[in-house]
Length: 187
Image (cartoon, rainbow, N blue to C red; front, side, top):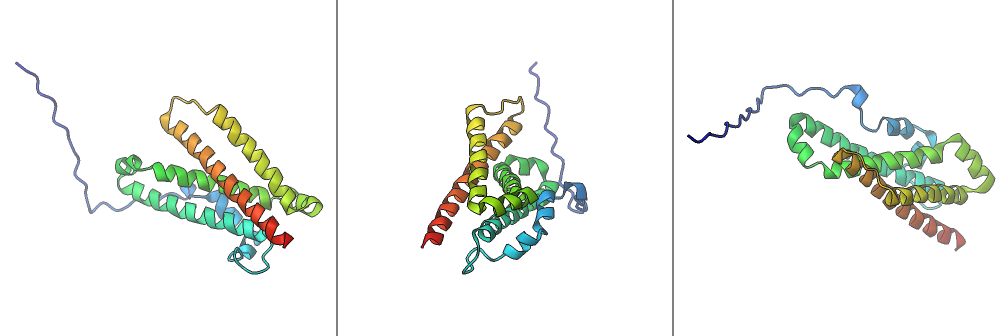
């Protein structure tokens, strides 16, 4: 007598179930939320294309916009995740990228707004700070490309790869921005 495969039980979705509220400790972009209130960030908003905007204001505005868009995207994912976790995880590739972008852009923004960076800018200039920052992160990207994380967790490895890719993209963007700003100031 042949054995029958067990029937798969699919639980029905109950539409009357209220949505759980995301606890505050899972607030997306907590570090960015703190940085977004920084006076330099507030002052730079909308300054990217403003005539006479300083390179500092343009870069801070760019990073602020990138953080804000990424945080909104990840927050939207978290809301959808509560409804159907399995389905959302199956389509989570973009969220890995947005979360990585949020993390690295927040890191760049925090570095630029740090008090020690302010002293460095007064002493050597904003272009020197950005050159040093981009060189340090470029070295880190190269190291991670040579020796990627090799965890037994596939999602952890993917998260590390997307963080490295997001870092490389941001380095490229900021390098081109700084080159453009340098040419603009030379005119």
